[in-house]
Each structure stands twice: as structure tokens, then as C-alpha cells.
Image 1 (cartoon, rainbow, N blue to C red):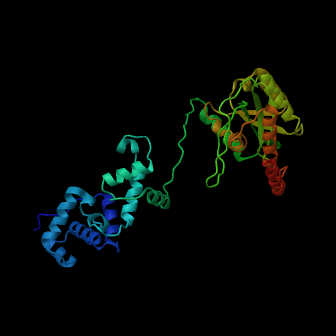
Image 2: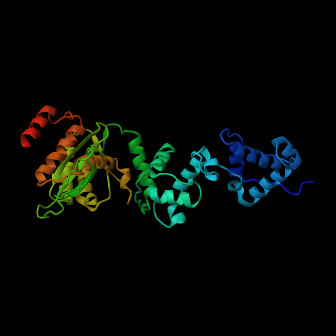
Image 3: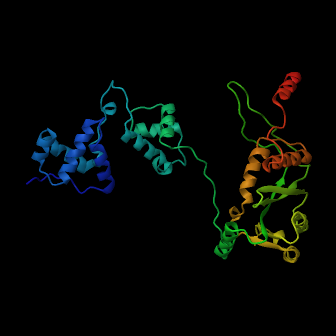
Length: 360
């Protein structure tokens, strides 16, 4: 009876061994996987040796290596174990590279994020690869679907009535009330006259756009009170110098006047102080305006937020407005295009080229 046998296999080891057994580009790994699986299946070592065409001593050696080091003890790659051979990143190596890239860098190298240089250094240190260029590592990760992503903060709602408010909003979004119109309302601001960084296209050898680093705060601020009409898919709003309950009530009256008096307005908004003012709530109830408040720290339930995200990207990003009139005109121009009230083109290409040539 054989005394050298393979230990019980873990589920991921069994799955990997079956994959190695079918590997056509690496016969060594295929034979090693077959030895382990046959031993675990109860076959004697001498019978395994006859079936694999090797010696019983080699079978016992492979079993010992697997029992001590697991899968890493039986894996063999020509580019890693022989010098002067062309490097080939087989499927197993690519999978391991992706696994390392997606693992916690804080646990592995004590840093909060990877860079290509640090990831390459770690792969070489751990003998996962002997060498790899940063460009090839970038290409390999892209092929494996591993991309750089921005992380974001997340704030949990502490509202004790979170679920009742959430379900009420979900019912409103799911079905339009009879004889009603759904509107999402929020404020964008304060809008300062300050230079903002952003993104732009630049050709090879060309400089990127630059904005001033200093600015004056004497221009004051503006607030854009906006509403998103879910039925018409339109964005509309007005500018105010302040953001108090009086301005908000005036905005609600302006919004009420844009729709038939027999139509009930169902307005989604956050629980900001001016929205909860007694005068605002009383006027809304008397004028067929129903208010739906989002839970505390859950403004993501207001669908106008995604409209603000696009506006900030294409109007406020990479800008340096010198007056509030210029900023207001830019926002109104974007809203007109977004609502389909004007074409995308604002200036003919040939006219633009003539102006650029005359300016130079």
C-alpha cells in the first residue's frame, strides 16, 4: 500500500488542476496535474507512473511538492526556469497577474494604490514573472479587463425614516400620478467666479490650456435653482443672488406658473432648511404642489443630481468666467442644447478658422 498520497484538495485547487490537465501549450504542467488528480482518485503510484510514462520516484516527488507548497510547487514555465528562451505569458500567469493587481496593495506593499512600476516590481520580487515592461503590463491588464477607476466617498443615511421615504420616492418614480407631473428640484451653488481645472484635447507637442491661479472674491456668488421635468425630460431654472426660503418660494411660484393650474406638481427635493419653512409648505399645499423630501444624506435619490454632474463637466470644468453674466449665459446655453432647443454647433468651422488666422 502506498504511503505517499495527495492530501485533500481545496475547491479552487481542484478546479485549477483540471484546467492545467487540459493545457495543451505546457505538457509539464499537464502531466503534474494528472499525477495529483490520479493520486487523489486512489490510483497507486506505480500505476500512475505507468500511465504517465515516468518513474514511481518522480510521482512521489511531485506528490511531496504538492503537499508542501500546493499548486506553486508543481507549476513549471519554460520562460521562468530556462534562460535564453522567449518569454510567454500563458493563461495561468496572466490570471495570476490580474489576481495580484486586484488584491489589496495595502496588505501586500503597505500602500493605498498600485502604480505600474510598483506592480511590476512586486511581480518580479515574487517570481511571478522574471521581467516585464510597464507598457506590456499596461496592455496585459487592459486585455484582462483591469482598468483604473476613481474611488468615491459614500455617506450612509442616518434618517430614522429612511425606508418609508425611500419607498415613497420609488413609487413616485415608478408610476406617474394621475393628473400630475413629477419634478426634481435642487440648488446648484454657490457659483463663484473662480478658475476651474478640467480636461481638454491636446496634440503631440502642443501645450494644454492654462488658467490664472489667483482670483478676486469681490464678485459675490449666484445660486441656480433648477428643476428637472421627468415627463418632458427638460431642465429649467432661475438664478438668484441668495438662497433663502423667500427665494425658494419665489422659484416654486415661478415653477407653478409654467404648468396648468389643474395639474398637481409632485416635487422631489432634499430636506434643506428653507425647503421645510412653514410658509413654503403651507403655500405648496394650497397650490396643488406636493413635496417629497429625500432622506438625510441621501440626495442621490433626487434625479436632478445626475443632470448637475453633466453640467459641471461641460460648463464649469476647464473654465474661467470673469462675470456672473458670462457664467449665466454659459449655463443657459448648455441647458438650451440639453433640452433640444438649439443645435450643438454655435460657430461654423470656417468662420472659426478665419478668426483664428486673423487673430494670429
